[in-house]
Amino acid sequence: MLLLYAAAITIPLGLDLYLPVPEENPLTAEKIEVGRRLFFDRRLSRDNSVSCSTCDDPERAFSDSRAIAVGGFGRRGRRNAPSLINRGYGRLFFWDGRAASLEEQVVKPIEDPNEMDLNLSDAAARMGIAPVEIGCALASFVRSILAGDSPYDRFVNGDRSALSSEEQAGLQLFRGKGHCVAYHVAPNFTDGRLHNTGIAWRDGKLADAGGGHGDLKTPTLREVARTAPYMHE
Image (cartoon, rainbow, N blue to C red; front, side, top):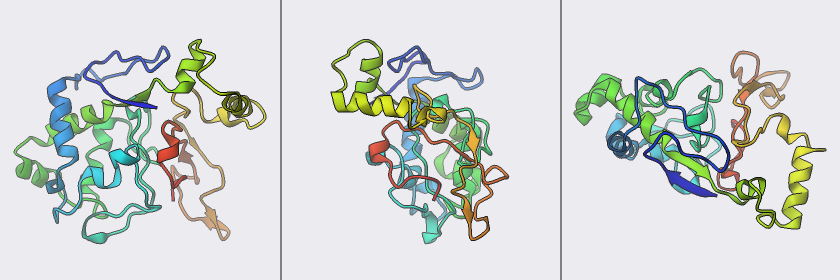
């Protein structure tokens, strides 16, 4: 799949899907660039050891190769860091859906004791930028992380040679007997909702309550070959 870094709000991803942007945080090339610099800056962590990119590695489709994320001071979190691919289309954020917007989501790892462990006002002082601008810039950068124009996209848009016969058989299975599309809905291959699939149940109890009842968000399958390990932990 092709990763696109967009500076406009109407970027088609092979289908009639356009990027929603909140009125209070309009998307600009300048803001995306500020967010990009912040994303890779280790000064956003208390001990200057990790950046956003530590757990959302561009080489791994902005995901983490570790089953459990590791933040500043070597502290382990509770879950795997999910991919940021096409997060601009999301409706709920984090595995448990506790954030309702990108602007809310992007600043929480900065203040989380197990991640970057830095008060947002202290982070703002370090970076010379207002706290609200940190959230707006990081959210804008994440909105620019887009995947599209894959063989699948070209196939469903009329190029019948884009998928091999084996890949077409896999697509049939994905849509049919496998029932994968019940949760992994195209074009983003996620329904964006929380589900209890049983994977949070361990030794007769919930090891992770997720959104409250062991329900966790369906991850996107975009760039899935590069985002292992899978599930929340």
